Image (cartoon, rainbow, N blue to C red; front, side, top):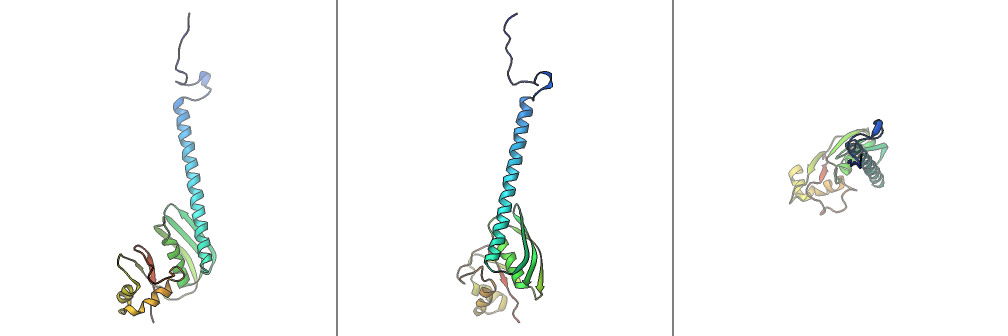
Length: 169
């Protein structure tokens, strides 16, 4: 007879034992996808813990605070001390790189009127924003105070940032 040559990894293994090269490649791709999903989940869990830690560090009072991150959406729950705290928590999370949507499921212990929100545009200043909402640019400290501790300087706002605009009585 003689020597016969075969392609080593072509076809099914003898007696149905083993897998074809295509089956092995498909399993490797599936394993890599599972590992990537697990890594993404770990990153999202770390992001959620970092947001919770930031909220705590800012001394925003929320009982049973829970943040869940899924891709570019964050869900927050817990009981905020007051409406201002609730809105500040939403802003801390929403003004975080990588987050485009916040699902606010918080409740409020001390109910008060909701503030408006303003997305900072290029060229905006707190004075210009105060003029727009209150008709008086000199009311900018009200906006600055309403956004503490996230804002540390009234001159340091940036385009795309969302600010609380409190109702003035």
